[in-house]
Amino acid sequence: MAFDRTTSQVLFDNGTHKCISFTSLVKGEGVQANQFLILDNDRAAVLDPGGDLTYVPLTMELNKYTRLTNLDYVMASHQDPDIITSMPRWLVYTDAKVVASKLWARFLPHLNSAFMSDRMKGNWLERLIELPDHGQVIPLGQASIVAIPAHFLHSVGNFQFYDPVAKILFSGDMGASMVEDASKPLENFAAHIPKMKAFHQRYMCANKVIRLWVNMVRQMDVEMIVPQHGTAFVGKERINQFLDWIETLECGVDLMDESVFTCPT
Image (tube, rainbow, N blue to C red; front, side):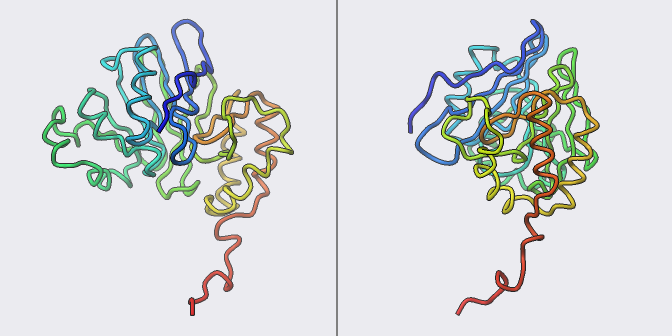
C-alpha cells in the first residue's frame, strides 16, 4: 500500500466556505475512490470517507485544512465498503455524527467490533442521523448540505450531497468513471463515455430511475458534478453532456433477460 501525498484538490473556496477533493490517497489496492471535505466557518463534514485503507492518509490530509475536533459529520451516500467501513474509527477518534439512509441504520453496527464499541464516545446510535427517503437539509457552520434522493443509483437507499454555496453535487456512483488520474479535467466527453458506460449499465437499476434523477438535477443550480470514482464534470456544458447521455442509457434490469437467468450446468 502506498500513500500519495499530493492528492488534494480545492474545488471551491470563497474564504469562509471550502470544498476539497482527495482523488488517490491510496494506490495499488482496491478501486480508485474520491473522498471529500466541506468546510464552512471552521466546521467540517467528510463525505464518503472510505475504509481502513484510506482512514490514515485521509486524516493526515484533513489535518492540513482543519482539526478533527471541528468535524461535525461523516456522511455516507450508501453502505458499500469503499464508502463507510472506516465508520468505527471516526466514531472512536472524533465526535462526528454519521449521516446515512434510514435503510442502512441497523446494518451499520455490523461494521463495529466489540473493541471499537467499547471505546466509542457515547451511544453510537445517538450519533446516527437517519435520512428519510425524501432527503434532508443538514446545517454546517453558517451554511448547509442537502441530502438528495438517488435511490437505486445504485443502492436501494442512496443519497447524493448538494452544496448550495459551491453549487457542487457530490453524486456518489452516478457519473463514476474508471480513469488513471481522477484529478485531470475532462477534455473530451465522447472519449470519456467508454470509461463510464459498462459501470453504469451494470450498477444502475433502470433507465426509469435515471430519468427521474436527471429531471431533478436539471431543476437544480449545479456548476459541478463530482462522483465518488473518477473525473468530475465541471461547468454547465459538461454537466449537460453527461445528463443528455445518461438520460437515454439502458441499464440494470433493462438489460436482463433469460440468458442471464439460466441455471448453470
